[in-house]
Image (cartoon, rainbow, N blue to C red; front, side, top):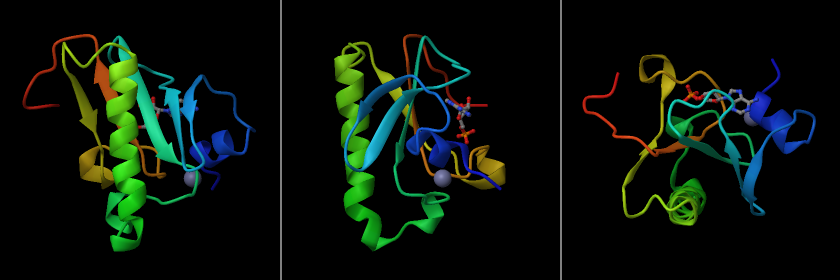
Length: 113
Ligand code: AMP
Ligand code: ZN
């Protein structure tokens, strides 16, 4: 089965790109659930967080630092924001290519749904 994020990386699926580095892409989520809803994912296909190990430590920290930087650039750092990684079926993961969500621009609640 084709992976939609790999298709985006390959340029075969259009997207609203916010930032890209050699290792990751930051895009607008197609179905935003907050005024700001970005996705960060590695160019290389890794299915999910649990498929990562020590070899991926640099990539994982890069994803988190880019999340922080993207939030600052969007002016979310003063108001606050949320970074989410959904893992597997019970975690609500629907795209099987590791990614982190950045959500902001509205009050977040706990516990999440
Ligand atoms: P998750 O449920 O954590 O796997 O999140 C997957 C996210 O990818 C959802 O928020 C979708 O709206 C988003 N999504 C799916 N396809 C695309 C796409 N082609 N471009 C942008 N976002 C997408
Ligand atoms: Zn993929």
